[in-house]
Each structure stands twice: as C-alpha cells, then as structure tokens.
Image: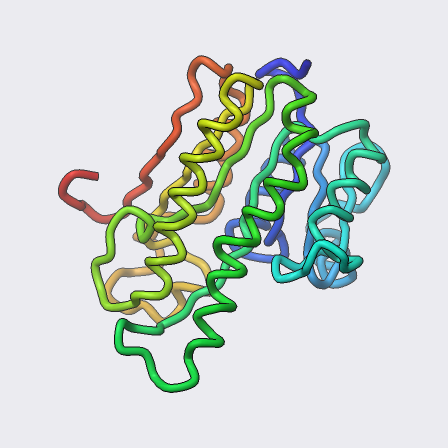
Length: 248
C-alpha cells in the first residue's frame, strides 16, 4: 500500500500542453513516477527534452493515448493502463487532464450535433473510460487517488455555452459516483474546479488579464498537494476562483 507521503505512480492525460503539462512537470520534479498519455508522443518527448526531462525507466514513460479511442484500439485507455502497470507494477493515481471546448449553445446550429457528441466523448467518456480501465489498479494499491479537472463550468453556467457546461456538469456527477464506488477501497476522488486558467483555451478571453487568471503552474501545485494528503483529509470538491463568485 502506498503511503500519502510517498512518491506515486501517476497517469496523466492531456500532458502535451496547458494544465496537463504543468501537472506533469511538477510531479516529475517531486519525484513521482509519471506515465503520460498523449496523441503525439514524439512531440511531447521533444518538448520535455527541451525542458530538461528525458524518458527513462525510473521516472517517466510516454504512451500513445487518445481520449476518443475505443477499448479495442491500440491507443486506448486499457492499453495505456496495462503498459503502465507492467512497467511499474501498478497505478496509484490518475489525473485525466485531456479536454476540449465547444461554443455550441442551446439552439445549436444545424450540423453541430457531431461537435457536441465529440465534446461529450472527450470531456465525459474519456475520463470515464480511463477511470474504469485503471480502477482495478487503484483498488489494488489500497490508497488510490483520482484528480479530475472539472472546471467551475461543472458547478454553474454563467454564459451561453450550453454544450461545454453540460459536459462538465456530467463529469462532476461521474466524480461523485466514483467517490462512492471507491471509498471503501481507499480510493479518494477530487473534482478540481478552476475558473479562468491562462491556457490556450482561454486565449480569446479579453474580459480579464491573462496574469490575473489562475496559472497552470498553480493548479499543478494544487494537484501535487492533493496527492500528498492522507485519505482522511482529501477534499472531494475544490473550487479555484480568480474572480469573486457568490457562493463559491
């Protein structure tokens, strides 16, 4: 059983950029064993080498993974989990960071159904498939952790982007179900809910200065702290606001 203070074997999706990359770099610096699942492993290897990290058997492995992949495809969640467990003997934590944005509104345009379906597949079913695939490993370690990048959009919808909010509300519901399912096995789930984060997804936002937004590195430090906590002190839902919002 892993202790709360030990280094963990952590799987992180969406690590090519933004929050996922910041999480990966922070956890590597803290000595965790990182298994990164991305659509373009070669590009990520090159990026990490530029930042001073190289793939090695002791602390870092990079695997092909697509949040859209079906279970029988070679870049699926099951394949990635199996490769990680074979390399390090198990999986102790999971941080699904892959996500996409859709601007589809309530009265969406003709033809946007496919975009909405893809959004739900990536933002909801992607983490669900990954969590399901890793579940036996998280149970076996007896002290598993799952940190979901949900968003404040999973707690309230302030604008008119219906599809994105729906995907994140559903993800928060999945987090609640996973928390209930894994509690007695020692699995602790945290729904991390940031507002505006200074990433490519917020590049078009002009109503708030980029430096006033939450920075990916700060969220990464939060994820690392969550992984260090004992099971008795892990919060389920954590709102991270760069703007004042009533009730959150």
